[in-house]
Each structure stands twice: as C-alpha cells, then as structure tokens.
Length: 268
DNA sequence: GACCAGGTATTGC
DNA sequence: GCAATACATGGT
Image (cartoon, rainbow, N blue to C red):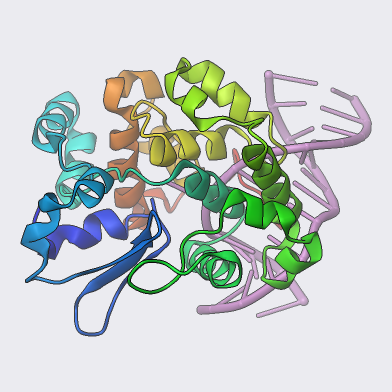
C-alpha cells in the first residue's frame, strides 16, 4: 500500500469519516483519535499500533488478491480496478450504527448524517474533530433530536441499537467468537437490522472477513458477473471479495444497464 | 414532480 | 416463501 492508493481503501464505501483535503491529505477520526495523512507522514503509519491495526497492516493482501485473480476473470477485473483496497478494523458500534443509517440512503448523505451525529454527540477527539458518539450518548438522545439531524425513519433504530449496546444486551466481544450465523442472528434481532446491515457490522466492525454484505449492487453483480455462484464460493475472504466487487460495480454501472434494480431495494 | 439512494418490517396471498 | 408497501430526506 502506498499513499497514492489510500483512497481505494478510504473511499470504497466501507467508512464514512475520512475526507481528502484540498491540499491532498487524508483526514479522519477513529477510536477517538484524529489523523492527518500526507505523503510525508504516511510511511510512519506502521509505527503506531492503533493505526497499524486500523489499516490491517499485518495482513498479506497480496496473497488474497492473487487467490482471487486465479479464481475467476470477473473477480480479477474487480481486483485490478482497485487492488489496494483493505478492510479496515473499525469500531463495531460505529460500523453498526453507520450502516443502520445507510439503509435506503446514499453514501454522500450517510457521511453527512454521521458527521452531524459526531458533532452533536461525540466527545472531542485527540488531535481535533469529534469521536463517534458513545452508545450511551445516542441512547440518551431523543428520537426527535435524531430526526432533527436528518436520520429520518432510522432514528428509532439508532436509538434502540444504542440502548442495547450500552446496556450490554448486544455484546460485541461475544459476537467476535460466535459462529457467523449465530452472530448474524444476534444482530438481526435488533429492529432496523436485517441481513445486509448485520453483515456490514460483522465485516467492517468485527473484521469477520467471511461476512458478505449483499446490497443492491452486489445482487446485481452476482446475477451479471457471477451467475450460479453464492457467497460461500468466494471462500474465507468472501467479505474482501465483496468489497472489490462492490467498488468495481459502483464505478461501472454500465455493466448493469439492462437490469431493473428489482430483487431487493425499494425505497420510494 | 418523479426517481433514486450500500434496507427493513409488516402485511397479504 | 414471495411480492407489495411504508418509512424520511436530499440530490438530480
């Protein structure tokens, strides 16, 4: 991974709190810390244990890529489009909450909603900006307050998820060690959390790399690019494959022009 | 205005 | 099981 390719990881749809500044730096907040990455500071990233883990620097993505490229030509195309994508180790609560907000929504607006929540309910972060709000903080917010920040019909979902995390009813430490189907079931027990959001929380928040979020783009991609395949076919790193394919698909909508989005998302 | 955006819950067949 | 519909909101 080099600095120039950072955008592949930070702007491929897995996180909502990073931005590229006009002068070409990347700025973001995670784990209550603000980070500004430039061409100059980037090489020292591995020295910080927190950020090394956040960017999953200990994993050999070259081997994962090579395996994908051998498996299937379409998968190889997706990998080559943005080979430097890595799956971040995000905070589980932040991932769950962010993807609850993602339903029936676009990435630009999700970023805005998350930014407003952080500004209103997040503690000041070390170095600048605000941390993602603690579950406790959002559990204590009124539904009307969350709606006022633009959360819409997702407001009660966020509040209830926050409450269950805050009181320990939903335990991320447990989710880390449960078999995937059982972890998924615990998550979908929350109102407003279905299979897609659950898999996002598992993949992005708990780093379960075999979780495979299937949104509209992935459903289209599966029909068109991988007919007859299912998530298990992608193997133990199915979630990584999903990220390559999701990003590739979103940036090649012409591949699906003759599809009628159907089979899934209906918002209006 | 209609249509869409990383879905989910509810209802009716 | 599976299709239809409501759910807020902002951008094109």
